[in-house]
Image (tube, rainbow, N blue to C red):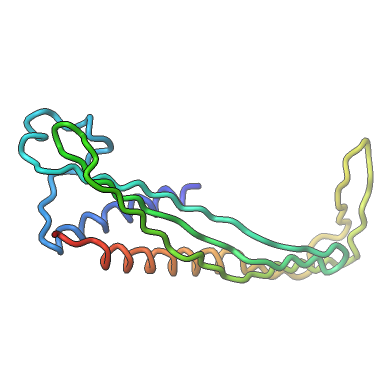
Length: 167
């Protein structure tokens, strides 16, 4: 999902800003410690590596007929694992796991058809046939996802700020 990839990238940038704001000197951004050459490993004391995992899920129930209605929740949760290593040997000094409570936002999708939907069974496949097209539609899924992602991002940023200490 492109949104999650972008969110992780923004979070990595914000994590670097948090470190700099807390007077932690930072040398570049490396995907792995192996990308650092030996001179860079000698110049730094520690290698600090975050792992970001974000999960987006939905729980919903729907009704057939007209109108077709689906109601449910968008659920976002995630965890950031911070690992501090000795720069040259790669030995782990500590690991901290920061988790955000799940963010749940309700949504509703309603599609009203000009004529009632009917279900047809053909060659082992069930499908809904709509003969007259859509009459009215209401879709709140995008707004629910955007609100949940925004709230999740803010909550995770606040937790990272509180848990990162230069000492």
